[in-house]
Length: 238
Image 1: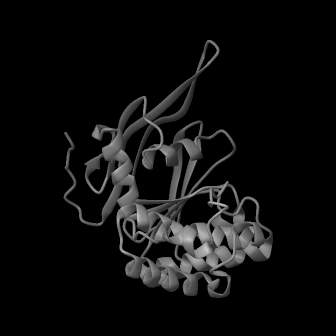
Image 2: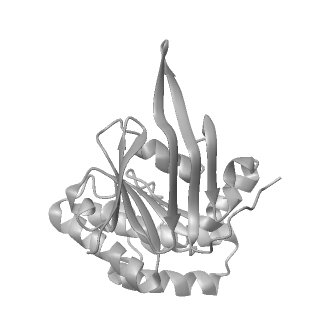
């Protein structure tokens, strides 16, 4: 049975003593250690810290891709760990957009087909998919590449397609794991400006993991992890 507990309309993510441990031989590794945080609608937040600090694990826990060892994750008041497998997949499909470092674009589909794929899984009709895809292609500046295959795109263009695909279903928020890690300066700047535009104009909420100063310099909130624990949580006016 699912559980709804949040009353604050602006809070879309809340974690409660969230911990994840792994066994490494005889050693217990704490990837996240009693993490408590909230993410509100419209935030542009980066989780930062050195390699091995727990950034990716935390995002995977929030996105329901990993099960916590203890603690809870609430997405818009829903304790997502109470959801069964199919329920969780459906909940993620309608509420959370993902941009992975490895992109996971489908190579046999065109750009527009990749963007519309999640909407098709949701059951959106063809007219809705075409309209939303055209809108997003305009936003990411790739209208002229609508019928191209991913293999013909640059790394930065592929990342923008991945962002558009994540946004296609109008989720509550986007999780982006190291989105600029493999991009040169120009491509990273274009991608970040695209996401900032979406954040400002459409109030899309973004939650990143990163160690890239280019992302940190544009984020309006920086959550620092060290050894799986939050050591700083700072907000900025950009």
